[in-house]
Image (cartoon, rainbow, N blue to C red; front, side):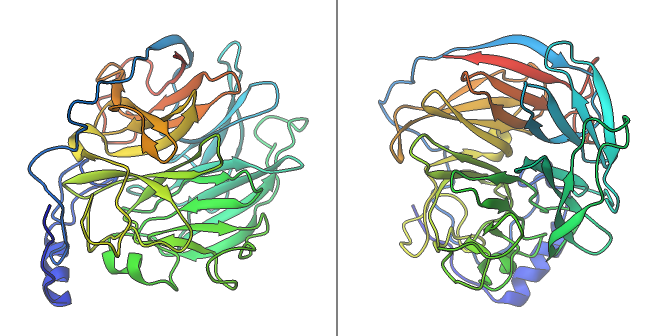
Length: 380
């Protein structure tokens, strides 16, 4: 392990601008990291030495649906049907759990897709309130809409009510995952929109995990009473999940070296852009696990049957990370490697099965017949 020496801000900006290629975080196309960060050992992937891999299996039970365009956020409705957001079209589609039949429920007004921006995360609140995170002309924002399935198809979304605005946007690193936690609060994963220093600015919402009430106000118990910022020092968070002890976990895109899985604690600093991956510097929280960007580039995250399940975009695989409290119980395992291409979102069902979306029609994948699709997996 070693730390990177700090350099001037001006040099960092020059190097960053020189390397601003496409991202979906770290590793869609390797981009240059800003100088002045303190990288841990970058010669080999993280490992567990002689710890044997956990025994487990993943079986694809069925393809739930095919022919989806740039699917991103997904929620499960009572009864099992799904609502799926199209990043690039700005529409939400209902997918029947039994037949896979698709029907458009409506278009979210104000969505301006581009790069990694567009209609991103979805979350279902109380009283048929559907929450969406999207990129507008001016910012990334969160809205809520009434979803009324009794209305005609294509007109089932009510007018959007903006509950949070002002998240800076860019072509890349827009974050986008939203989820209600066990405490009933709305958690939001954001990106630093290719401006790494934003991640360390505590009064800015970019490069953070946010925690807010369903109305978009700072939640009681946040590190600062008047702020939605829950923690900081993130590059681009696109996965949020809680284990059976209500601990929060997040998956995060690295730049060109390490992707991360972090145990999230309020008020803590997760290091970006000073560190990427594990570090001996005690000022920053080190990830539980790290991966080469070619093996992960993680987006969605879910918890089921004692493990976290993490979708890999560039990695083209589903990672299983068995947990023992806040440590790993065994070496992570990879499943579905290169079988279905890029994997975006993972949702755990009540019986422990998983739903996984592919992400091959977003302009970066190799499109296969039937893409994009939703897979149902049985895990053990």
